[in-house]
Image 1 (cartoon, helix red, strand yellow):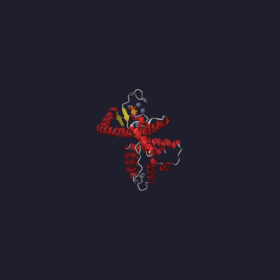
Image 2 (image 1 turned 45 degrees about the horizontal axis):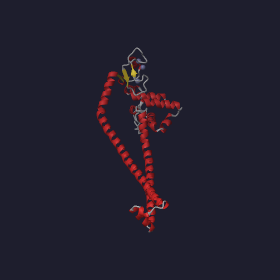
Image 3 (image 1 turned 90 degrees about the horizontal axis):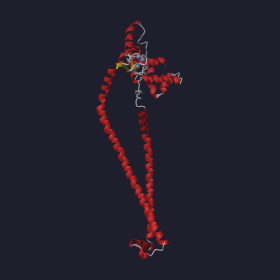
Length: 298
Ligand SMILES: [Zn+2]
Ligand SMILES: [Zn+2]
Ligand SMILES: [Zn+2]
C-alpha cells in the first residue's frame, strides 16, 4: 500500500500514538519524519504484527473456551425457561378449553332432553341417574355450584395472568439497560474510550500532576475541544466541573493553577537543571504532550 501523502512511498509504519492520527495511523518514512510523536509510538508493520500476536495469544485460547461454555449455559438457561413457560401455557390452554367444553356439553344434554321430549327409558344409566337426581332437587344445585367453581378457577387463571404481565413489565425495565448497553457495544464495537477516572488525587509536583494525564485518552481531548468550540463555551473550568466525565480534567487544571511555583522557582538560573529535567521527562510522555496541547488550545 502506498502513502496517501507521499504517493511514491510504501506505507511501512503504524502509528500507535494516543491521538487522532492525521495519517490514519498509516505512515511512510517521510510521514514518520514529519509526525510529531515519540519514536516508540511509530512501529514497523512487522513489529506491529508481532506485538498483536503476543497480545492475542496471551489472552485468546482460554478466553474462547470460557466464552463458549458461558454462551452454551446462557442458551440452555433461556431455552429451558422457554420450554417450561410453553409447557405451562399449553397445559393451561388445554384445561381452559376442556372446562368450557364440559360446561357446553352438559348444557346441551339438558336442553336436548327438554326440547326434543326424549324418552327417559332410552337414556344411558348415568344420564337417567342425572335426571333423577335433578327431579329430586339435588343435582341442579350441585350443577350451579359446579359451574360457579369452574368460573372461579377461570378467575384464578386471570389473576395469575395479570401477575405474569407485571413480571414481564418488571423484567423488561430491569433488562432494558443491559440490552441497550449490548446494542450500543454491538453497533460501535471499537468505541473503547478509557473510562475516565473521577477520583482525583492532588499532587504538589507539576510533573506528578501531568503524569495523571495517562488516565485521559488523547482522542477524547480532541472531542472535548470540538465540543467547546461548538457550544461556544468561554468558562472551560466551570463547564468541566459540571460534567462528571470532565471533572477529572477540571481537577487537574485546578491543581496545576494552585501549585506554588514560587517555592520551586522554575525560571531562576539555579533551577535550570530542574527545568531541563522536567522538559526531558515530559517529552517522554506522549499523554502529557497531548494534554499540554489540549491546555494550550483551550
Ligand atoms: Zn499518528
Ligand atoms: Zn507518507
Ligand atoms: Zn502522512
